Length: 299
Image (cartoon, rainbow, N blue to C red; front, side):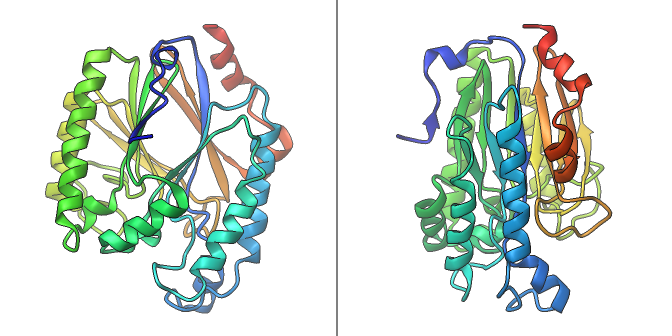
């Protein structure tokens, strides 16, 4: 299977509204590391994150109707490539995720902790062995989805040829999307293009301005509807010429006022309607009637 999956003809056709679940940053190990003030080596416990990830999976499994897929937008574990606890963190996360209902596909997005702040061919290969391709596309119900490795936008100094390969592939995919006349194009990546405004200053949690401007313009011209990201461990977002930037808080460690949670995204013929739910709320009450009505309205 290449980087294009789910391209069966039936998935290229619009069949009515559906929804998916976006999660981000389960990041096994960060809660302890953050508490003890050692984000490099303090990630030797992650029992709290295991419980939160289990709660997320249980909440998703109970949903009716079922989501079309569950996407995790990066920082699957805290341990950087080559660090002491990484292998155990990865194994424990896999053990939790394998309890996801088998009818709900999992989609993985690489974050900076998954491939390193300055990724190399080796760190990306290691990620791909564990979680699948670092960038790929798929179709669901007439909607075209692109998963990108945003670390290649952030710092590709150790692997410039891999960034170039993703850039060429992305242009090819956008040409396919234009030809196929899809309903919407939606992008998943780890690092947000921006947190609230397209011209905000560059910082740790967004992409460098010139890189951001080039990508935003490319996405706008291609008619991309929205970019969903994580990385910020808080909810945020904004828009650029009709392109919506959605930043979702974490399943794991919170760095702001939000709660551990997941985002429910309903895709209709005209638009995307989404809401962030705390894990407790989604577990106990499920999706609110208002969103379910949007889902049912155009069937």
